[in-house]
Image (cartoon, rainbow, N blue to C red; front, side, top):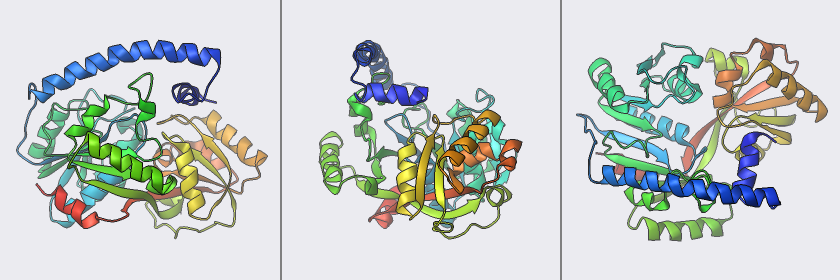
Amino acid sequence: MNGEDIFKSIVSGEDQSILGDVARAGLSLLSKGYKKAVTMRNAKFDANKGVVKVSVPVISVGNITAGGTGKTPMVRLICDILGQKGFHPTVLSRGYRAKDNSQNTIISKHGSILVEPEESGDEAWLLAKVLPKSSVIIGRNRIESARIAIEELGADYLVMDDGFQHRALHRDKDIVLIDASNPFGYEHVLPRGLLREPMEGFARADIIVLTKVDQVDPGLVAALRKRLARMAPQKPVYETVHKPRAVYTLEAWANGDEGHPIGTDSDLPIMAVSGIGNPKSFTKTLEGCGYDVVHTMGFGDHHDFSDDDVVEIWKQAFAHQAKAIMITEKDAVKLSQLHTIEDLKIPILVLSIGIEFISGKQEFIENLEI
């Protein structure tokens, strides 16, 4: 069990040991200080202090919990929608795990990737790869990124990735994603839970999107909707699923070749390997596609894979008699850079995932218009 799993077992209450109780008590004290600081910060922005408005529309895609909710496929979908309408969007990413995100760096220009993955971080580089007509910029200073996008890249729309808490840049639409399988981060702010801010923050959202609704009971989705109606009244709520788009060999994915239909190699025992916020969700997605998942090997979110990891992946695949390994696109960014991955005598497959609306997609698109 890695450190992230241990942490989640504590904050979720799964760890019922005395040490778990002691840890939760200590984390609760820390959460009080964190909550106070976040509340004071939000009050400043609520008063419009320190907020900069730029000359083009800004759409923010974010969440209220730490961990994966589907921001990357949602950003991709929004850029595709804007592109189809004739706009030229640029994605503003913080550049998490980039080599140096204190500098504002153009990762791609109108679809042409300019840097290697280690320079940009996995998510920003993945967005640059899958958005052939858009541009991507990283940097902690989103206002400076916005200036570069408008003045140097000719952007007429900005899409801010993971922007809900980055409030210095004015946004015209705030889209908040909620993972239906763990919507409220165990009901506590960090570090006692996974909430990045108190749930009162939902009131700032213009649009709320529930993701992975197919992975929970319909009754839980209905209850979630009722709760959101109280916290964010009159705000539109849409239900989506993570829809697999295609499956690639790792080599084909890295080379930009075409993928194969979902279900290809579904007769093979698969080991699911991922360094994302919710590895179990990835496994459920694979099983929903008909794959025989014999083992799940989860690493921490944004894990930096090493040669030793590749050796351990091979050991686990052999021990569980897996005949192929399935990874996410985000993990493919890093694993494709390791020469040792080429030595594995087992197929490495990459699952490409998009967001699909259960209903209301056209209404969602109309609500995007600014």
